[in-house]
Image (cartoon, rainbow, N blue to C red; front, top):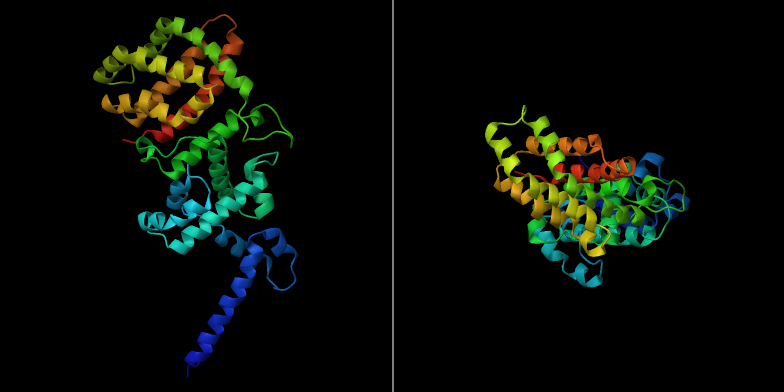
Length: 315
């Protein structure tokens, strides 16, 4: 004979009460580690923390670019309706993002490691929060209609690349360096790439030489006709990144100046990647004055641009 329904209901209610008490500690997981009220096995405690701080990619995408204010929290019913995620869950996820943002935005070191250390969550989950915090700190534009096709995972990949290659942590190690602080000297030095505009003819020759055997005839002729536009777009974006407004609009500029024209001209993703690989290597092979410095700048710049364009190019 099964247990009486009122006994089952009472047991379930006890579990809810217990979880409500545990939730207070989850706001600061270090306190959960130190408390003695609840006897939790290590794997159970870790699972509770990981589940509590779990975040849906669709909700994270909606939060990106929004101010983490109480006013926006009141509008989460729209997010819940759009994403088909329950409102209570949306509020929990929003509160977690806001809590983590406040805890780590001014801490030295890398975001992912700081989040893991403070909140005891997995590396993959910490990377998601690091992406949100990074894009919020640098105020990257992600909300424009032109960018709505990009998923959270797309922006996660792009932001992670920027953190690795364009912040001070690229060339420096130690707790005093932040991966929320762009390498200003590098961004200023990128203006030196303007000299490559004078090498357009040589670079076009090298790129076309590499790509002619692997592109269809129509695709090759299109590239031959429009090379100047694509080349100048890459250099112009690089030379303007030292300006905060231009940096914040990086994803918009990549869409407007490269992705949209490529789509209109029928490029597929393979063609995009072949072009980027070829143009990157062609500059590295070029004989230019101050060549080593220019090559290093170009390579570091294109590491991010290649990752972003590959990820952002949806057909």
